Structure formats: C-alpha cells, structure tokens
Amino acid sequence: MNKRDELWWRHGIFYQIYPRSFQDSNADGVGDIKGIIDRLPYLQALGVDAIWLSPIFPSPMADFGYDIADYTGVDPLFGTMEDFDLLVKAAHAAGLKIILDLVPNHTSDLHPWFVESRRSRDDPRRDWYIWREPAADGGPPNNWMSEFGGSAWQYDAATEQYYYHAFLAQQPDLNWRNPAVRHAIHDVMRFWLRKGVDGFRVDVIWHLIKDKEFRDNPPNPNFREGRPPHKKILPLHSTDQPEIHDVIAQMRRVIDEFDCRVLIGEIYLPLERLVAYYGRDLAGAHLPFNFALLSAPWHARAIEKIIFEYEQVLPAGAWPNWVLGNHDRPRVASRVGQDQARVAAMLLLSLRGTPTLYYGDEIGMHQVAIAPDQVRDPFEKNVPGVGVGRDGCRTPMQWNATPNAGFSTSPPWLPVADDFVHENVVNLEADSRSILSLYRALIGLRKKLPQLVSGAYVPIAAEGDLLLYRRQSEGKAVVVALNLGAEPVSVATDAFRPGGEILLSTFLDRQGEKIRGSLDLRGNEGVIIGG
Ligand code: GLC
Image (cartoon, rainbow, N blue to C red):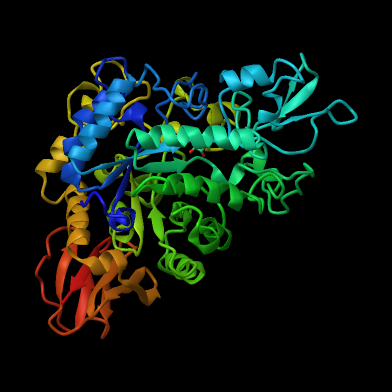
C-alpha cells in the first residue's frame, strides 16, 4: 500500500485484535505485543490492511484495559514501549497499519488525575471529573444509570460529593466540558501519532458530553424484565448531546495535523443519529462504526432494509463501514450459526464501505460457554444471568491443535473453545474449502475488483431467504446472491448478464461456472457473479 495514500482506510480492511487473547509469548496465559509481532505473517497472508488493538496501556484491568491508569505507557502484562515500537515498525514493514484504542470518556480510578481530583473539593484537578452534590435526600444527584448496572453515581465520603461513572465505579468519567481535559487527551493522541500509529478507535465517543443541567433521564416505555437494568431508562441526557460534535471536530483536527491517519468512533445509535458523527462538512469521525449488523435479525428483508436505510442517510461524500463482531458482542458464528457464518462473511466483504473483522471470526470461532466460576467480565459479574457476559467472545485465538490451541504454553486467562483441535488456523489453512480459505478468497477478490469496494450498491431482491444485490462502478458490475436459509433457492432473474460466471461461492467449489438462465443456490450458499 502506498504510504502517502490518504484514503487507505476506504479501501483497506480492518482487523480487531483483543490483545489478551491473540498470542501469548511469555507463558503467563495472557496475550501480548510480542505475540502479535509473531503473528503478523498470518495477518499479511489473510490480506487485511490495518489492525486495531484493544487497549494495551497500564491498567488495573477492572474492565480489562478500558480503565486506563496511564495513557502514554504500555502495561507490563503486554510488554514494553520498546515492544510497541517494534510492533509499529514490523507492521509497517509488512504493509499493515496500526490503530490504537483511545479511551477518553473515563480513566481508571487509579489514574493520577483522579487520585488528585478526589483529594479535595478545591484540588486543581477536581473539575477534570464530574462531581456533584448529593440530592436533597442524600442520594445520587440524578437517576442516571451505569451501563454495568446500578446508579452511575458513586459517593465519595471524604469530600461528601458523588462522581459520575457511565461504566464501573473504577472508571470515573472525565469532564469533557473542561478545556484542560481536551488538551490533555489531544496531547495523548499526538504522543501516539508521533510514534507512527495510523489512527484511533475512540471508545464510547457518543458518551463524552453529558447534559449541562444533569436532568433526569426518562423511563424507557419499552423496557422488559430480563434485559440489562440500565435499559430501564433512556440515556437522553447522558449521551449523544449536540455539543459532542465540536469535541469530535477538535479531535479530528489533531488527527489532521498528521498525514494519512484515521479517526474511528465507537457509537451504538440508530442509523439516522449515527451518521451525524461524520460531522458537519465531514469534519468529524472518518468512520463512525456502523454496528447495525450486530443486532440485525438474520432475514433477507431485514438486512436489505438496514443496507438501504444506511445508504439513504449517509451524508454526501461520507464513507460507509460495516462490522460483524467485536469484543463486546456475541460471536457471529453463534448468532447466525456456523453455516451462515460463511454467508455473513460474504455479506461483510461485498458491501460498500470499510469492513472490520473481529479476530477469530475468520476461523469461525463460536461463543464459548463460560462456567460461573470462570467469569472474568465485570459486566457479567455485576449483572449476572441476563446474557450480557462478554468473556465468551474473548477466548484465546485457536492457532493449532497443541494444548491451549497454541495460544499459550500456560493455562490461558479464559478457556479455549473445546473444538480447537479441529477448528484452528493450521487445520483450516490446509483445507482449501475452509471458512479461513473463504475469508482469504473474499479478501483477495475485494482487492482485485474495485467495484466490490466502492461500486454503488444496487438492491435487486430480498425475498424469503434470498438477498440479491449488484455492486457496480464505471460499467463494471458484480452480482451478490446470498441464501440466508438452509433450503436451496433458485433465482430466475435477468439480473445476470448472459455469459456471467461465478467468481466465488461460499463453498469454494463453483469458480468459473457459467450462469445460464437461472441460478441455483444450495442451502447456506452465497455466490459472487461477474461477467
Ligand atoms: C466500550 C468497550 C467496552 C468497555 C466500555 C467501557 O464499549 O468496547 O469493552 O467495557 O467501552 O470502557
């Protein structure tokens, strides 16, 4: 890839690594930076262009690194700053970009800023966090709830005020209305950008600014028992405030001080609100993560509707993106089933916009059941039994059939999936029809055919289990036909040009087959047709 290629993040493919679970190099059961360096050839062969690392910074690990105690260091668990510098060098030499996680909404309660802030009401750092007087009855200042259960306010007896935490009490929220906080985080960004990182994925970016008046949030009329408790109220005043867009535009200006960098935002919002995060005149995030597929019902019409709506609401010039999995959501292979996981891969890699892959999805890793005494995730510990646990999608990468799947020579921090003896990189690489081979073929095809990256999305049909669309640019087109069900489907359509041929089937066994009249799809089959 060209170093001066400003738009690399448009045609590139992103790959998320959860560093704790990718590759352990020092036998402590937790993945690390050296392990990632060792696995760069794998990522190169897969064909991805950029890797995003979940947090690697010093942290007490209350939320596994999303509670940061030092923004410009490396946690010894993951290695040293020298290891990180080596990773950047080695990745760049391999043609891979490095994206870091930026977690500006909150710090660890052990971050020196918070230690100072809680010292006294008149400490110069007091206003770096969100402190409020108790309500008249001595209770929390308002009804805002933590995403991880309970009130979002923690009482601090020493100074007799509450501080706000959108997540754990060990993750106090920074006060983004304070310019000093903005400057401090901008300097953190510059620190890493100078080291050569290619951009950031910004954690919970839609949370940064809260209502100035701290008004109570309204109840959620659609709340049903059995759902996580924080869903009882709508986060109307605690997230997605209009002032957020200035904050992001400022971050973007920092990004733009450097060449060819990217700003990605983590945002769980309905599509029409999500797209505001591109910013006025596209001066916001380059890529506000589009998570619509993470919760999409797996039906042709539902998916078609999402794609269509997204294409409709995208501002002019805004570049789309798609995500099938991440470290917070159940594995796609379990959500849609192993058979459909291949169809999902074809969908992800044939839509317009930048795809982000989650480590292990390319080998079909499934959600691992975690025994109660093995739960590590604080969300599951705080809110047990309603299915919010995130450990099952964070289990060690399955590299080979040796003990612990080649991830570590010691017992790993989370259990390895029980099917690792068969479902591992070595085995799947040797099988030319495996899901891993499919991912490689899809990525290869996407690199070969620009219409798959940037061609217009033209819906053709969404009926029953069939999802059919065309991707076309400058006279070149491909047709994508996905069977989202287990029964065969016959597609009689004039959507295919005479002489068209199958470029790829999810079963990897029909390349070159000519289409005559109709197209027969097997159950759980997707094909890309060119010609
Ligand atoms: C984001 C992260 C998640 C973390 C939360 C709090 O949603 O993806 O893993 O727990 O922020 O930092």
